[in-house]
Structures are given as C-alpha cells and as structure tokens.
Image (cartoon, rainbow, N blue to C red):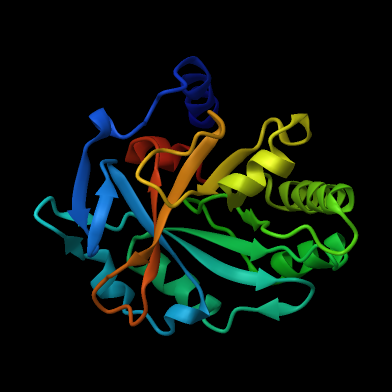
Amino acid sequence: MRYIFLMILIALFPRFGTARNGKVLNAFGITVPMYDIHGIDVSRYQERINWKEISGFKSGKDSVGITFAFVKATEGQSLLDKYFSYNWSETKKHDIIRGAYHYYKPNVNSTLQANNFIKHVKLQTGDLPPVLDIEEIGKYGSDNMKKGIKNWLKLIEKHYGVKPIIYTNASFYKKYLSGKDFNGYHFWIAHYTKTTPKVSKDWLFWQYSDKGVIKNIRSKVALNVHRGTKEELLAICK
C-alpha cells in the first residue's frame, strides 16, 4: 500500500523531489545536489569498506550522511563480485538500507544471468528492489538487448515478488529505454551534471557523480540521491 501511494504521488507531482530551488551542498569532497537522502554504490573496486564508519559518517558543514548503498552482486552468467557477500552483510549489520545490482551482458543468455543473481542474492524485509544495470547493446543489436532485459526483469520479479529497478545513463535511456517497452519500471539514472535528469518522471535515484571522497573508502566512489524522503525510500523496499 505504501508503494502504491508513492507511485500515485510521483504521477501527480512530476517535480516531486527535485533539488530545492536549485541549491547545492558541499559534501563528499564535491558540490552535491540538495536532496534529503544520499547514498553510494560500490563494487570490488572500492575493496574492503569499513561500513561501521560509513554508517556514522557525516560530510561537510551540512552534515550529509549515507542512508543507502547499492552493492554490485553479479555480472553475466557466472561472475560474483568478490566483495559482495561482505558488503551485503555489513550494510545490513550497520543499518544502511541496501540494494543489490546485476551488470547485464547483452551477449549472454538472459535466463542464465537471472539465475546467477538469484543464486547469490537473498533479499530480506527492508532491502531495496533488485537492480538491472544495462549500459551496452551487445553484438546482436538493440532489439535483442531489450528482449533479454525484459526476460531478466520478468524472472527476477517472479522470484522476489518485487518489481526491479533499471539502472542506466541518461543518453542510453533516451536512445533505447524511453519508449513503452519499459512502462511501469522505475529508473536509477547516471547523469553527471548539476541539473536533475531530464529523462522521465519515473526516475527514483540519480547517480550524479563518480568522484565522491568518503573517509574509509580507498578509491573515489559514485554518489547518488533518492528523490523523496526516507519514508518514501522505505516504502519501495521489500
């Protein structure tokens, strides 16, 4: 019911959650958009993270913290991110709202890719919906790519009982995913500018930079915002 209420709000108020008055905050070593809910996404490239420190971390004079984290789980037919199990358990342990994502390979059978994700990712109450990361067309063309990701999304929704989120960049979305094929899905959009993604009222997350600096993470990290409140973020969780 909370999820349905959130969807109604977004449909009625397409400017819901936009950066307030175009203002920005200084945090994470860069200028960031002024949203209430900030998060990161990580993979093996960030290596071993001290999630206890991340859960209490505040950045800048505005005390911006980390509320959620998307963790890379799988890629293609068989790859499992080497830090997934650690990141998945530690985020939960330290009360960071967590989500898992799969990097989709268009040249690989989509059912096998869904099975790879299902094999390794066990969702619990309070976890964000599964995410499909799609950034390439593959050698068989865009129609085959779209057919494959539709199948992946269908299998994942059937298994977990929750509609997945689609991650992609703004230009890929506009070229391949903006039509009727993916009506009803919500998006996490990578768009590295100071303005909100001009793609769809259906985006829930905006990855606005990959240059974030966070204490206890060795490399620079991708930064994200959720367009609503924490209550609205929790409403889309399993």
